[in-house]
Image (cartoon, rainbow, N blue to C red):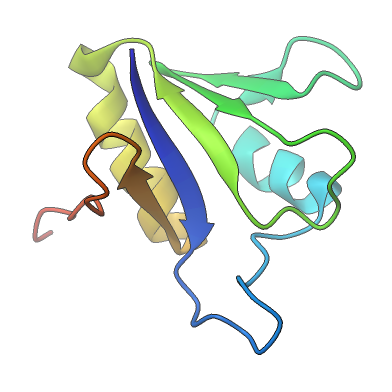
Length: 103
């Protein structure tokens, strides 16, 4: 299963990484993109071909781990999420940032 780190595409701040948003904001934004937790308080959000792992007790969220569970459908979903929410994705194994195709 491929793993990616999710980061804000906004420039880093003086005190480190820019936040992706509050837990509540992230859950609301991802819900509009068909990605939801299984239950209230769940730290894993499930979407088409992907799973987001939220860090315990972190609010605001500065980074998340995303697992690609179905490569056949995940890439279009990842690109849409990245473009819509202005997030970037970095492959854990290679350190490479994913590049979006020209629309």
